[in-house]
Length: 291
Image (cartoon, rainbow, N blue to C red; front, top):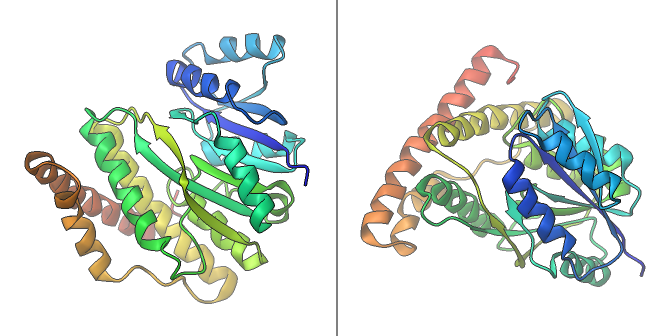
């Protein structure tokens, strides 16, 4: 089975982090792949950097006004020439066997989509640690084999190009937050087979800070509203939400993962973060557009 990848990287004002991401992609053991970077209106020298790499034949790049990663990934999808789309973000590092492991999964299972996990690159950044802890918690809870639809995040996923085009890619109404949940649900409704492999792990060098953390949580809440609203409009029913006990487990989960002081801090940030998610959801519901 000949498997080929178009790796799509949306980027916005993260030049140094992007350099590191691309270095990790250039070092892949797998050979049959292309790299497509979509510059989402950066003003930090990213355009010039990418144009130079494109002139050297190392990648292809496209530029757009700042419209968010969903539109960026869709622009990359439009120009992709390979059979599978590999998604990674501009703050992530892929191990050298990243694409090879995905190729093995596709060959073995015939899946239309597959995702993996992430570890925090900068363990001193408590905002990044908390954000990744929340994401990893839900991946562990959802991807235990008890549900048909896995929880896959767009910083570490691969999809069949044909399947993505069948569902028109990412929904651009999601600026940030829940866009991958929406995509995975639409793929599943189409009949795509999606799987999760916890052994495919990237490093997430999130440059989170207090402002970015709470903005992220707020947008996640707005995205959740869009996710449930759009699902109901398509199918007449909404996906089952996580039971309340899951959120209680999330609150206590830091105590089995961190030292006492760090667990206390992460627990407080989880509470504040989930309150901000709720605020984002309510705000979107009031506005009835989620934008």
